[in-house]
Amino acid sequence: MKKELNDRWLRISFLNLLIVALLGVILRYKIAFSLPFVDQKFLLHAHSHFAFSGWLTQILMAFIANYILSHDENASPKKFNILLWGNLISAYGMLFSFPFEGYGAVSIFFSTASIFNAYGFAVVAWKGLNKIVSKDSSHLWFKAALLFSAISSLGAFSLAFMMATKTINQDLYLAAVYFFLHFQYNGWFFFAGVGLLMLHLTKNNIAIALPTQKLIFWLFSLSLLPVYFLSALWLPVAKSLYPIIVVASFVEFTGFILLLKALRKNSGEILASLDKPVRWLWTMALIAFCIKVLLQMCSAIPSLNMITYGFRPIVIGYLHLVLLGMLSIFLTGYFLSVCRINYSGMLIKGLIIFVSGIILNELMLMLQGITGLTYVPVPYINEALLICALIMFTGLVMINKNIWSRTG
Image 1 (spheres, rainbow, N blue to C red):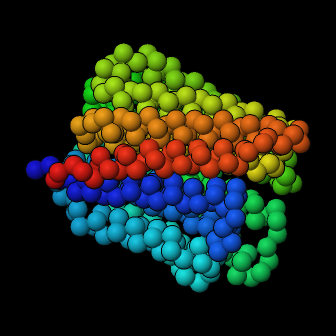
Image 2: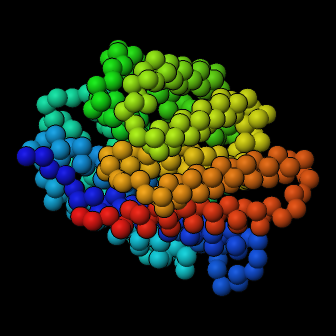
Image 3: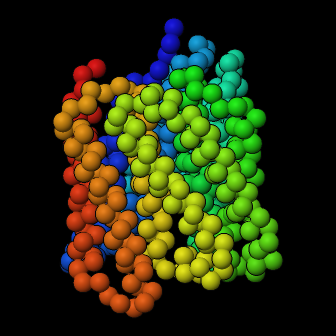
């Protein structure tokens, strides 16, 4: 008998994304206008931690758990439900503690609980994947994702150690932050996302040669660690490793080209397997992925790297490109393809408004970054970014209203 988690976990994830968007609106309002009772830095911590744990990690855990449960009759839904509850409670603990104390006792407790819960999920999911008799290439991607999720915690624990011992060094602090971010969005999130893509291809009998699939996997996997140093070129060790970093960048780019070729070769079958809204969403996510890889390649040039990682609007624009433009849009499409939701007018409008807000937000951040480098101020840029945040929030309200109005 096929077992799956209640799809309420997926709907909760989208509710969490709505909360992330609401925090984004408040942050943008705080920059554009006065909001004295809100601590910008503390709320930013809540926004970023909840986006990672409450949205992306929550929905990826639910997707992977559902895959394991539907392919292993002995797998326990109870274990996955406990882990999903653990992640959700940790995420909400961070949501309600960071705005009031920043990095304090309560927020650090829930942050640490989130990490150990992720360890628990990795162990249970890894064992579950091993028990599935009929394995496909998605297993490689899922296992790597779980491993990189665990590795990313080294950055978080390094930050905790520096704060506990009061030995914060600016370079090492940034290196630890970028380590955590890199292994989350280029490791855990990206590899789990590609695993879901490969799973979709397998389900629909869309064939990519197994040797090609494995080659793509290993090119991305082996380049992940050295490519991290692109975000830490100011460190002395990074400079000595620069030739390796450049080679790794080209290795990753080769994997990217091979993946694009494989998708293009099977584009007819892939498009036929998708409903029109999902087709549109995945096309937008693919465009964002292409832009992301090209920007990462450009950052291998030292002069451009210093601009990229040294200027806040560009960093924020890049993170939003990956987390919203690539991952969130892709996962929204995957959710629609798995749950087979009826496409009401409200849902379609919500999707269009949400994606339009993401595109406008990226354009505004790009404009802010470029003009900031030339010290030319853009009139009303903060107000424009607030409007973009409101557009995304409005789209997500409509999407959530449709999702939660479903019966069953």
